[in-house]
Length: 175
Image 1 (cartoon, helix red, strand yellow):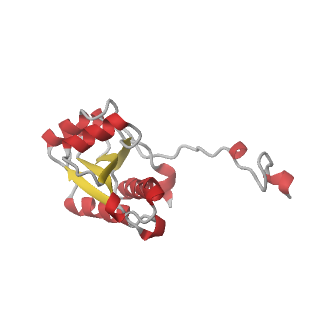
Image 2 (tube, helix red, strand yellow):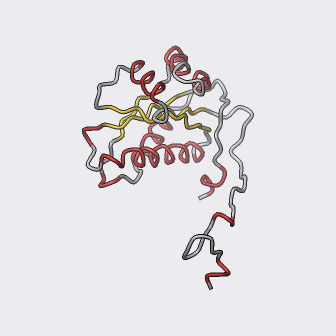
């Protein structure tokens, strides 16, 4: 799947709306993610309104670019859906990655902005969206048509990070 290899974090977007059918495909891709015990804890807020995007940009020093996105998805986990309480971040990570890969497939660019990694940002997002206590903010995914940046291959493979059978053994030593 070429999208895995060419996906890059796109932080600059054209002033062009993302079509509703593409937004639907992005959400569907996210919800196809694997999930611990099939708990599917995800909930999403879709934000296209420019004033609201500007508010999102204020939730974190790293979220400034959300203001110029065509759409930003707020990825949330519903505590009431958790069968494996320790698995929600893995579930949400898989959903986020699916969404980012689908964005590339659709000719879009996107960037994952962490929320759950910061108590302050989590609180800012919770407050902005009036989230109930059982809804956990996880991430923001800002998407749009790339402006000047490209999804292109950069080889990140590092053979020295692959171990065979035991730690520190390369493939030739394991044969």
